Length: 361
Ligand SMILES: *Cc1c(COP(=O)(O)O)cnc(C)c1O
Image (cartoon, rainbow, N blue to C red):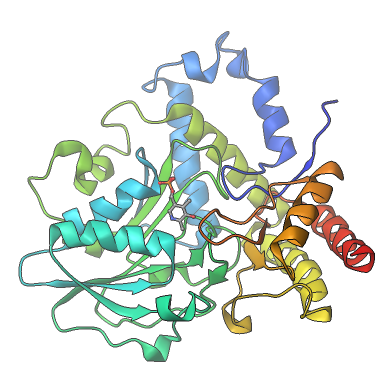
């Protein structure tokens, strides 16, 4: 058995051990085909089965009906920053964005390349310590869509309520919290998520689009950059990221086996309570920069009294088998990423380590 650490990496990050073992066990001979899945044609029966099963699992777990298309595309979530306005922002319309951190900013930067863009909320001046309350948001006239980032991976904030946008489509970057909790996913016209936080390896991006919104997509775009292409061809216009979709399917099956989003959410709640519990016990020592009602369950950010102690904390944690705790280089501090595949035991052990570190330092 390989020696495995407690992996708190922010992405790519921990995947369920069961899934990794399954991939390993069938890597050389996928279900009696005598070849690996990555040696098989993407037009083969075995890949068709994977593609269809992955689509069905996304819809089942998120509670989406047949009026949604589920796509698997390349280019990362970052390409979606451009594809959304390219496909949906028309002359005379305004795209509305909420600026809640670094990824939201990158989305805004791309939208500006394609048309009129309005930032209707920003917490930048407050150090990105919160996300907007739904009631704070006023949509501009002629609004093509409202774009939000459900979980701010770098800063450590998360929406716990989403605005009702009426007839205006709600678009969401869910890269770092998709499938981590129950939500009314039917509120969203478009959801996208790079796989490498909660769904699988890097290289595939999940895109979910409601049919009424897809019907508004521009025609005549570059073929690979048009949602219409991928929707029409069931993500098989060109060679899809086969290995990524295959692993995503296994991860989704694992989520289902846990008991679906309800069960996963319960474990995620217990995990975040371990860490925030210690932070709130010693608020002058483990300082949380995010407003309590905007705290993320996926990426928990904190500061120690000084940078020396933060360095020491990260080094001693690493020696004790807890890796990936260094905050993003743009914000510093500590970041504890508790994605779906991080077991409760990891959070419990880290909470104990935090207590012991505080006593010793
Ligand atoms: C990681 C991340 C991205 C970037 O994803 P790529 O697949 O690397 O392009 C975008 N948005 C959020 C919220 C993320 O966490």
